[in-house]
Length: 178
Image (cartoon, rainbow, N blue to C red; front, side, top):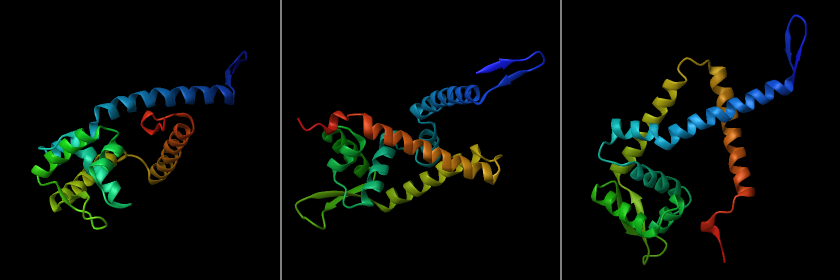
């Protein structure tokens, strides 16, 4: 709410909050466009692994994350990326031919085949992570350490809020039990 006096315009906290929320919405749109174009991933591929595609980065990330909790199968990759298992299988096959991933027998059930990163795959993940870190560092190069700390905490809190909102309110069609 804005009140006008004879000499000055006074903004109340509600107006500033509304303006700030509108700014967040506008910035989210800009970020979504950049994320949709996968700017960081494209730059990382261009600089580190020109033979890979964005989909390959997604699979590498799915394998990396999956390995933290256990063995990774093509089914786990498909579920993580929310793609058809046959598509996941084709992508994994491409990456096996590029020596980025390999298949091996499961340690817990020799009848199952799991997917693991090769040394090249691990090196690519490390290099891609370093490239991504370098890009983020470039973006915040002129920020103070305090600004970086505050932003990192608030950005994490913001994304956590998004995840919690969608966990409560969005029904994932892939999770249907009917």
